[in-house]
Length: 491
Ligand code: MN
Image 1 (tube, helix red, strand yellow):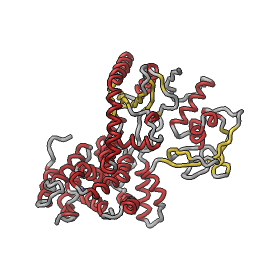
Image 2 (cartoon, rainbow, N blue to C red):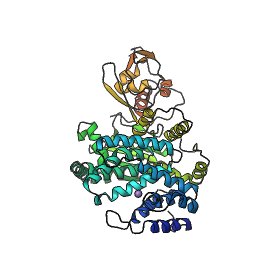
Image 3 (cartoon, rainbow, N blue to C red):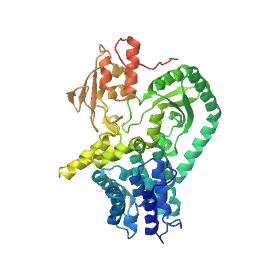
Image 4 (cartoon, rainbow, N blue to C red):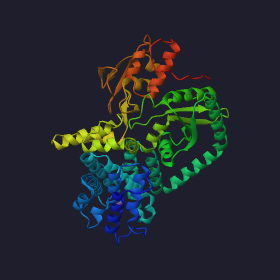
């Protein structure tokens, strides 16, 4: 971070101070506290100067006599565009009405606006900084407003942060908000986590040391630290697992940060040689990044004192990206990125942030007056998952992009290993066909079938990939040039 503000930033602070003079926040503090806090957040995220300036001025047009033209004249087109975007986003909210009708409408309006503003994702980043500070100071508002803002944050802003892979922001926002949405539950879960961590503390220290020693012996440079599970993500996980805490395997997690991808896989091997890995719990998000670009290898192991611990292994760069997401890539590519934004290009964005490209393409279509399927886009923005059905009507949830083999391996590896074909919605289809929301999927098997190496290309989920590799590994040490398979020690 810069120690000293540039003259332009200093000037923006001056202008904002003057514009907000005599205004106060609900906390009783002078209003300027808020834009300055937003400035600080954006600087911490490593955002470019125009974004920081727009952050300082983000409430000025809506709440003060300052006009967009004033801002354009003094700070240029780019800052004016960003401030205008943030102003439009806040007017897109629907005022104080019944929360149940309010949220869907807000989501819809937001979506329309995001599409319109999709040209410059920095608008969303300013809005997220704005919301973060408002959440941090939420206690000053009356309870009904608190609840509304908190709920909206959980349902709109935290998922948005997740889509931008801003992990640290997502966690802070969700926990701040959840505390207001369900205070009793929050406290309960927080207690649970604290107690658990206290119990685990000593043995975690021991594990840290064991792993550290083993890595040093192999001359791998590393950093290792514990990560605390957030209250809200525990809440969501418990809901998925019938409130059974014994099914939550990542309550305790250790994060190992190493120099490069090769070291990630070596580290995985070393951890597996120390402890027993739980089968089906290795997730290779390096080979298969999450949709938001998240990369890491996760593995859950059982330690010598029978403790279940999740390891997350990643490089420094992956770590930065997991914590700060899109904002981090601004930091790394600031020059290039702002240049390209001016030219209206975004192809330099990390390829796994394809939804942004999609947003832009949709924006272009809208401008040309073409019809756009908003429902489809909504799914992309607010959910990673699709739900498909077995012929018997059992619901299986899979990540978007999943293929028939993913479905088959999810049912059972015996089924996966013997696939000969697939029927989707009653019709014969093929193994390359992406599954869609609501599909009924029937897997055809034959006991004479054996798994093929070529299937690896017809698989999307790390889970299915792992199962397939496992069988392939067992049946023959094939000589094909696959990725190295991490060693797995069996019990
Ligand atoms: Mn604001």
